[in-house]
Length: 575
Image (tube, rainbow, N blue to C red):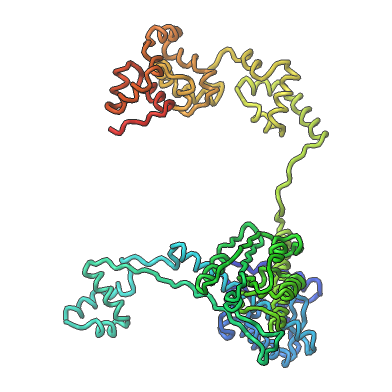
């Protein structure tokens, strides 16, 4: 039988990508999957508590287990290697589609399995450490973590309050009551305080994750060429410390790495001579990155500190190249998450080789997962990439112009109804400037001149803008008769300034009569223009009296005085 096993770690992840990949593989090979097993569980859970355990128990000689990658079985190196060894002894075939790896009793298969599993183990460790660093940074910023506490109205013992009250009345101690209700004595004490009307508050206290100290491993029999000094010894000998931080995209933040390095340096008493930060992918050539020029500054006895070795690079060739370049100069590399100081010794070279292989495998897996997600979305009919910009060809432009010529009379009606060139352009799929040029070409006049010629009589039905202004015609007339400007009226009523200036006189005339301008000129008070000649006097009056009192005293409308105060920068009186 052929078993397909799919696993994700949380509900926020989906299994569709893995299922789609396994279906494509089975279709390409012409095989049929007999049993599908899916589960949402962390790889940190015990193997016997996972659905994978039932699959492993059911597998027998000749069966096949399909997974997208070995990390789906588990991320613990020893656990996965034990499972693979047991399946190999039974004669079970295990195949990982992403890595194109088949379980076999040969050296190549074993080395590949070790490398893939080591990469998965290191990836899980790094993910866990990055999460802890993020929580530590959030705690340092004063954020409260964890689930919100439940309200005092509902507690663990809220349904046993009558029973607890009876026990308290009998004189029983809190400890005896806790045994009777099967709860901790502190929980019982808090419940009694709630019953007495006291407010009980719970605060979630989380401690910051301690940073790992530097671990220096030296050979059992050191020689003159391989003795590795600790970071403290190098710093005491006059060495300098350089810190390097890298993230791959703008969506990531380098605050976690900076906080991690700063905390360790502060705890150890180290002084960082220079920081280097960059946002760049590890796929970019080393010579094109800032770190290449930054590394040229390091001299013998200096220390390069990073949060993890993958920040220098995920390519095995780049990582080994940087290591050999720095070690050849006598520079040490300290990795916080790895808890190790790399120097000129065989142990460091061995670990660098393993870490570079794991980082390279992790980068390839990330790339493969992205590619498979893109393939799955395309198979579902999702259009990927940025939206294409519309570039109308000459044929399309001629077609649009032909449509507009055929609808010449309709366009004239739309303009008479005060439709804008932008709205007309949207209808025919052209820009507003194309509509303006079309009107000028076929009618011989601009849009404004055409409207003035055909729109001699206006009614509230002509334009939506006019209808809005018509609704406020009484207010517009009142403000205009008080001497308010069209600009002030438009700002106050939130109406387009163009609408007010075009229809304002007609609207005021419909309310006040055709002679409203003459009456306004006759009632205009001569003191109003003198406000700007007595700015300091008005400022002093506003410090002693209200706006209403000052406006009555100097003989200007209150609204005009407030506009004057705004333009002159005079604050409103507090009393």
